[in-house]
Length: 109
Image (tube, rainbow, N blue to C red; front, top):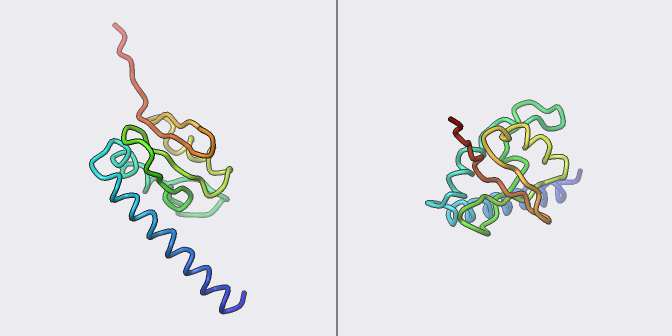
């Protein structure tokens, strides 16, 4: 990798982080923002790499305040995301987005 390629990669990473930060500000005080805060730092099993977190593989998108919508870095993230957060959340693939909402627990008598 040349120095120019390295600089371009760093610049792209910085721009992506900036977009995520802007989106997080828009999501504040919404249900989508609360879900993002709860899941972004959860561990996720990706590519047999250690210490991977959800935020490293997905990006939040501001679409609707009641559900969190994510863009995946790759399609292989979906099964790992479902495993990492699936028991507490409903994870659904909708076109190019993944929606995340709280799972509803029904109480039976």
